[in-house]
Length: 318
Ligand code: A3D
Image (cartoon, rainbow, N blue to C red):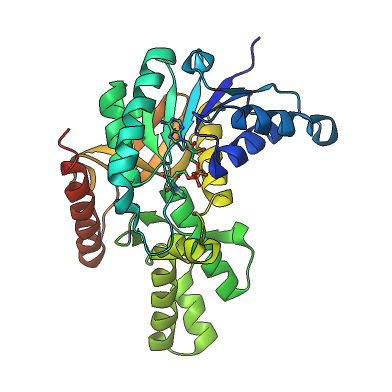
């Protein structure tokens, strides 16, 4: 039986880590595509030569021709420019939408049965464009942002409370921008509300609220925090890990509930736009969108985040 095939479009910072993680986890054979000649081939050779040390049995191939992605089960897209200090994700729309159009055509014409996970920014707009150009059903075209935004929120909570990241549950909804919605009410340590634990730690509800607000703010600006430190690009280890978790859930039909940028059809009061929401990801892609009641404050934050997404997506005139 043939191994699954994973095509990575964009062989830059995130693409390279994606290739290595996919190989280390033996998710399938990897094709790393980029327009730069030699670079994806070099990265693949480098990773493949670590196989005897790490002990993985998959093949890795660098490519500059879309024909090489034929038969891919999952395609992960990172083609496009990352931001530099002082830039917002939205500043990338003009240059990255041109790139995304050509990438989506390449996927449509060469891997018509693939599931597509987009990472390129501005995320919500790039997923929308990718789905429109490929014409693939929406359950097969999704975006990675929420897994990472949620992981950052979870990490900050774990560090604050001095507990394992494995026991923290927390999620962000909405667009992948400064208005994203970290859900405080549902943040827990193995089911124990985080707010209750903060109150115990600090002895007052007011201080607990202040500490949580700081973590929410840090989560919203977490991408920018890394950009400011790196100076030459944006986060790449954590976005790669996040997209691999989504790909793995689809390839292994795990049915994990992961915050996913998915096309909504009335859920959370949104119709016809891609926005981050919890989804069941399995062998059929987005198998279910898990809708639940937001309180008035959460809904207001969600509406604000969705308005920002709509403004950007509408500017593409699709
Ligand atoms: P980078 O290291 O620059 O890699 C991008 C790659 O895309 C480069 O190797 C380019 O050669 C390649 N490329 C450019 N044009 C094309 C094309 N037409 N076809 C194929 N490949 C092309 O960037 P990166 O890997 O750090 O980031 C990639 C994207 O992910 C950027 O848009 C970032 O903003 C975005 N990003 C998203 C998140 C999310 O969580 C959503 C996080 C971090 C970065």
